[in-house]
Length: 241
Image (cartoon, rainbow, N blue to C red; front, side, top):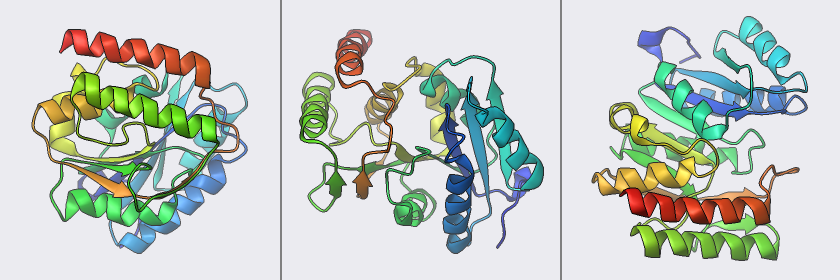
C-alpha cells in the first residue's frame, strides 16, 4: 500500500513535534516515510511545528505542498510539546496515532513493532523503553542517573508500573486516547508521564518495547531546570489524582 492523506484510508498517523528543526526535518520525514512504506499500512506524517524561528515553518509547509502524505500544523508561538501533541492528535486521521522525536533518537526500525502493538496485538498504548534489560542506550552517565531517578519517583509516588515514561516514541489506539486527552494538562515534557499515568489509572492496556536509543545531537532538555520542574509536576499530579 502507499501513503494516503484521505481520512478514510489512513491507518497510521505519525506526529512530529517540531521546534527549530529546519536542519533535519526533511531527512527525518524521508526516513519515516521509508519505514512506513515497509509496514504496508497507509499513513500520514503531520509536522506539529510550534512557533519555530529558524524556517522550520516554511520547510514544513513546503513538504506539505509537495508530498501527498505530509500535513503541517503551524503554531504562531511556542506553547510546548504537550500542547502541540494534544492539538494535532485531535485532527489526525489515523486509527493508530504515533509520535516520535524529530531527531529520531529511537532507532526507526522499531516503528513496525510499535504500530503492530496497537493494530495487531490490541494494546491501547505502546511506548519505547530505554530501561528494559534488552534495550541498548547511549547517553551520558548524568542523564542516565537522572532518568532512572525520575522514573523511580514516578513509580513510587504515582504508582505507575511502567519503567520508562519519557521516551519520545509512543503509539496510541485512537478511541481510548480521544477519551483521555482532554484530561492531560501538561503542556511540555511532562506530557509523556501524565498520559501514561492517567492511561494506567483508567485500566488501559500498556506495552513497553525495548529499543535502541541514543541521545540527540542538541537536546532541548535542560537537565537541572527541567528535572526540578518535572519533580514538582509529579507532586502536582499526585495531588490532583
